[in-house]
Length: 428
Image 1 (tube, rainbow, N blue to C red):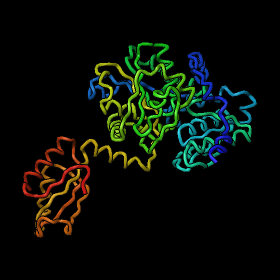
Image 2: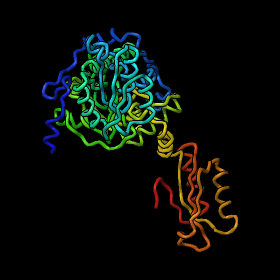
Image 3: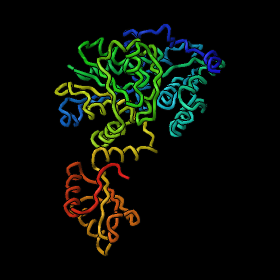
Image 4: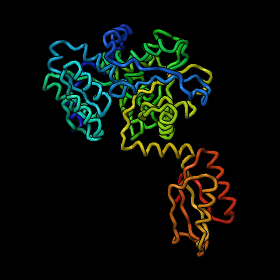
């Protein structure tokens, strides 16, 4: 059965695993000229986080594009390079988010029909946005890989050209315009940190930067739940890599693009892997300090700095690409709470206190006197095994920072020296 399925899979003529193509720098230059002012030349300014990490950090703010991500660059370039006949027929793609948005928007601007197959897990807000831009949306497939198979089949049946969102040569060349802008905006750059999903952005951007400034170090960043480019580097070619749910959902691509890999693998100096806690914290830092809402994949570069994975860049001039801002609003509050917990500004503890009148009031006064805010408080009498006249109290508090949390811990420990105190992010 699996053999039959494999035989029925339609190949993408522009992304042949047996004949991968490395994109030429001239294509990036041509893409910049073709795109012109139709895509935002996003700012790349120094961040106030520079002092926090002892490096000169510049954020390339691609989330400021009209549809919220860097994908617009490649989308417009690929549409502009269609033949007149293909422009009339239209194009098709498979995407759960940013590529779909970019292609739909620029298809509308250029009068080119766009069809997109989106998986059932695609956020409703992104589906509605694509429909607003006039795209023909089909919801089918459990994931983007399933949707891709369906889109390729639909494209063949309807005469629509399939545009891979991270591996088509025109997509890669379009994303490379980020690199051209970076070297112009930040002279004497030492390094550029770039998120990796399917590989389109890092391949095009690295090509542009390394061609213009060969000394600049290119560091790729992947979420620990989807290290597909690192797997490709080890195997010497793109290879399927099991992915699991991640806050950086836009980077969760099981197999990187063959053309992207061919273009980028010799240009990348190092790839690091970030954990979920650092991604959440990076999102929070962007909100609080940059006044910017950035999605998990877009914040991955900053997460690498926060996690301490690039110590060699201390004292250096570093550009971090914030590639997108289309975070699902239904999960944003959960991400912020997770980040506050990681930052030790949201803490919880269990303590055994007197069950007589005034016992819990005494506990809350200790907390209040320290200027700590109680978010939740629960009493558990049946599970207090040490003293029948005591009650186990669970408390969730919000503090200013890690030092403030330590002050609270010390105060509780001092006031209840003989109590059964449990402190930390997890307990039974």
